[in-house]
Image (cartoon, rainbow, N blue to C red; front, side):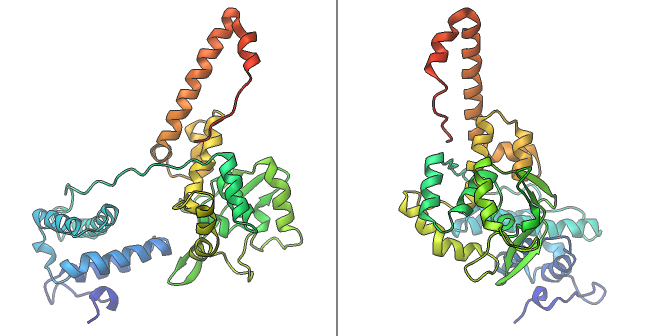
Length: 331
C-alpha cells in the first residue's frame, strides 16, 4: 500500500483526523527550497524511518515521551547515530510546521536527547601522499590534485566548466554543482548557494591548460571516459578506492581531500575566514569545527614562530637562520 507521502495526498482536517502521514505529505510537498539531493534524502528518511512508526498516529497524539522512545528504540536497533539524528530532524521539521499552522501548541520533538555522533579523525595528507595517490589514479591524477589543493567538493569539480577557469589570475569560479538523484545527474547551485573564487596553485596551471585545450567554454573540464558527467560512485569504484588502497590509504574518500586542501593554507598563516571562503562553508564556525585539529596545529606553529622571533631579537638569529625553515608537516 502506498503511503500518503507517495500518493501526494492531503486529507482536509474538516473531514477526518489529521495523522502524521497526512501532515508529512503536505509538509514534504511544500519543501520547494530544497536541493534535489536533500529532498531525496528527506524523502528517504520519511519513508524508511518516520512513517513506518508514525504514519497512522494522529498528529495531535504525538508526545515528547513518545518521540524520545522512538529515538531510543531506533538507536538500540543499531541505526547509525547520524541517521537517527537526521530522521529526528525531519520529524521535528514537519512538527514545527504544524506549530506554525496552529495545529499544535508546541513542537514535542524539541529537547529530545539524541545519540552522539563520534568525531571522526581527520586525514591530512602530505604532499608526498597526494603525489603517490595521484600517480596511482592515473590517468585521473589531475582530478586528485585539484581536489587536494583547491578544496572543491566532488559535485563542484564534476560541474566545473572551461569558461570558469581563469589561468591568468589562477582562479576557479565555483558557480555550479552536480549531484546524482535517482540515477540522473542534476545540475544546480553549490551547497551554500553562493559562488566563490578559489585559488589555483601555480603548479596546476600548466596541467589544467592542457586539460582544457581545444574545448569550448561551456564544456566540462573533467568528464568520464565516454565524455559524460563524472559520477562519484563510478569514480570511486573504478579508480579512487583501488588507488587509495594501493598506497596505504584504504578507506579514504574524495571528500576527505578537502581537509588536505585546508592544510597548506593554515600552514601558511591563512585565517579561518580565508579558509571558509576557499572551502565554501556557510560559516567560520563550521570551518573551525570541521578543521579543529588543523587549526590547533596552526596555533602550535604560530607559537613556535613567535618564540623564534623573540629569540632572534635577542641576537641569536644567525644560529636559528642557519637551521633553515625545515619541512612543513601537512597533517
